[in-house]
Image 1 (cartoon, helix red, strand yellow):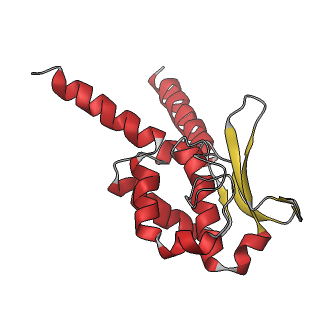
Image 2 (tube, rainbow, N blue to C red):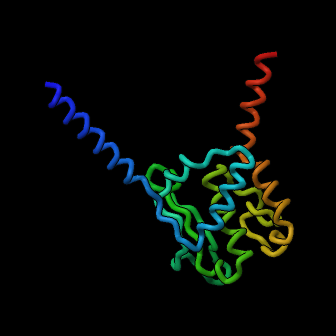
Image 3 (tube, rainbow, N blue to C red):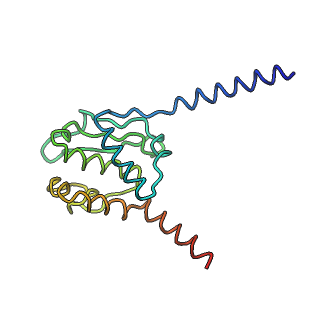
Length: 170
């Protein structure tokens, strides 16, 4: 009986390990350094990102997003049938300049990891729908990133939860 129980336990353990190994995200290596920088900022502001990372299937640079006058999409998140973000896609054209790529990538990462919606139509912020100048954002990068994180829905919710927890002991 013990032998059968041990075999069963080993079987369950191996199946669980196999299923855990299936949890992976395909990340385009050209985006990995920017994603690492984004995660450093998440750590700095106390934002958990690990579980949200594994909700994704793909973080990729693609060549099938619109790139025409009046209809250019430099990045987007795609959603599955349940409405959950499952991919972060960056247009290959964003790679023409490293500053544009960084702004677009942080914008798309913020949709998923920081629960952001757009902040304005065109206001020279990372989370604007469009930007007249990505270079103005890049010149003010430290302030832009601080604003992105400290005004994010996730950060504000964490701060509020912490404040409520502190006040309950007074």
